[in-house]
Image (tube, rainbow, N blue to C red):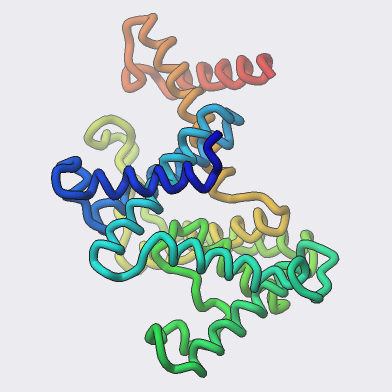
Amino acid sequence: MLTTGKRFEDAVSIMARLRAPGGCPWDREQTFDSIKPYTLEETYEVLEAIDNRDWNELVGELGDLLLQVLFYAQMAQEQGSFSIDEVLERLSRKLVDRHPHVFGDVKAETASDVLRNWEVRKAEEKKRRLEAGGGKAATKEDWSESVLAGVSPAMPALLEAHKLSSRAAHVGFDWPNLADLLAKLEEEIQEFKENLKELPEPRQEKEAPGGGRQRAKLSERLRGRLEGELGDLFFVLVNLARFLSLDPESALKKTNRKFRRRFQWMEQQLRGRDRRPDQASLEELESLWQQAKRQEQAGR
């Protein structure tokens, strides 16, 4: 019977074979940059399988995500940067070092205690790297003492907002209760409404290209202010999700899927009448939308 270790070694060997001379032309042409979009895509497909509770599909999607790790490690080994062994060694060491309540004598009774200890250990690791001086060169973020250091601006905005606010909350910069957070949400909504008062009147009679009504043109100044206020509103909503231990990205994804289901049902109904959505009135579309909602609720 094959062990987990042997199965992993086989996967590593297959990846090496694909990249070797005489291997797969497509795999051999790939670079770190060309693979990045696939990594993001595979990550979202893992999340989709989890949301659908499709465990059989999740097996395959996790394999696809693991393939990304093997791909990067193989390319790194080819250029002499590191190998999959170093990836695994560092992961194991990190898991042990950051769980002293399991592998040491540190006490952590709750999940919050664990998170606080995790941040402390990360800060200690960074300090040791700086003091050691040798080895890996310190990055700009290594020199920063900010608790926000390490939150990559390259990640999706909702996730970045969640991580930034979580880091700040770990040092006490957080709303004390849900009521205060909801009050902040109301405040941001009111500020957004105040800025909306400066919107020029839209020309209601003229249709925009592709259907729909012509939108009012915004000055650069007003556009900037509205964008800022809308960003503030999004940020508070992300904090609301964090406060309730909800994942904002997952929440929005589920709403996107719900919208897709309902809208496509509406399109199907209109096709039965030999019509398209842009040939229906807003009142008819709204009526169909409510029917779609009722059908979903009845099916629960």
